[in-house]
Every structure is written in structure tokens, then in C-alpha cells.
Amino acid sequence: MEEVGLILQNTPNLKHKALLTVLYSAGLRVGELLSLKITDIDADHMRIWVREGKGCKDRLTTLSPHLLKLLRLYYQRYRPENYLFEGSAGHQYSSTSVRKVLNRASLKAGIKKKVKPHTLRHSFATHLLEQGTNLRYIQSLLGHGSSKTTEIYTHVSSRNLEDIKSPLDSMVSKSIFER
Image (tube, rainbow, N blue to C red; front, side, top):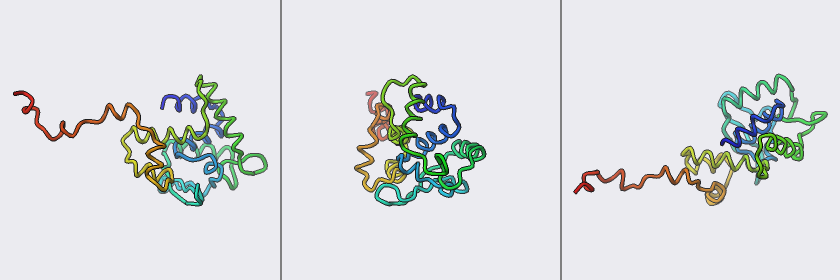
């Protein structure tokens, strides 16, 4: 989480910050990000519509109140007309540009390992898992058809293992062990 925060902090350009923040906070694939239209942001219900994601499936993902505030600032300044993130002449932003923006921010943040746009999606899933979000919800947010995909994709962190309590601890009174 700290490294994602550093990346976002080290992205001074508002458009670039908004772009990377959407990628992370909604757990999107880069192609899904680039296909987002302004109308896919549902502020009334605090969700983002992902249209024709992988497998040509539509899905919903979460819209953070912090992201919504950032997107409103971004929209006021840039006034995109069709796609949420547009390059020159109103065309779709390119995946190459997204990678360059992320690489620049990662270097500026002092992160030595290679960071790809998909790393932010993986971080989204991992951080939800660490916060105790049910794997089925993560599966739905990511648009995975199989829970097996989500289980592989969201590796179990040591932080999760430390928080797990044995069922014995909640079933047995401590007096049993005092004898």
C-alpha cells in the first residue's frame, strides 16, 4: 500500500494522477481503463461500469469517494468528450502512454522493481484481501469467471496469516488450559 501511495504522490500531472488512481482503485486492466467513457462513472451509486471487459463481459466495480473528487477536478480541467481519458484530438489514450506515466512515477517514487499497469490491479486485489474482503466479492470486482483465477491472482500475504485465529480460540474457554 505504501508503494502505491508513493506512486500516486509522485504523479504531479492531474490527468496522470487520475488515470493511475482509477487503474488502482477500481482494479482495472489497462484496456478497460482506456475504454472507459464518461458515462461509465456512476456517481449516484458510487460505482464504475466496465463495458465489454475481458471475455466481452460487463461488470461493476467500486468508485471511491476520493477518486470521485479527483475525477471531478480532472473533468473540470480537461473536459474529455467521449473517453474518460483522451489523448490528442479526442482519441483514446494509449497503453504505451499509461506505461510511461507509471514508469516515470515509479522511478520518481524510488521504487526499484518493475511496475506495470497490471501491478496496480494485482495490488488492488491483494489489498482488498488483506482488509478482509470476501474472495467472492473480489472475484466479482475483477471480473473473474472462476474463483480459482482469483485465488491464484490474489496471493495470500503473511499479514493475513498473522491475523487468522484458530477456531479453537473461539470455541474453547481458557479454563480448559489452566488445569
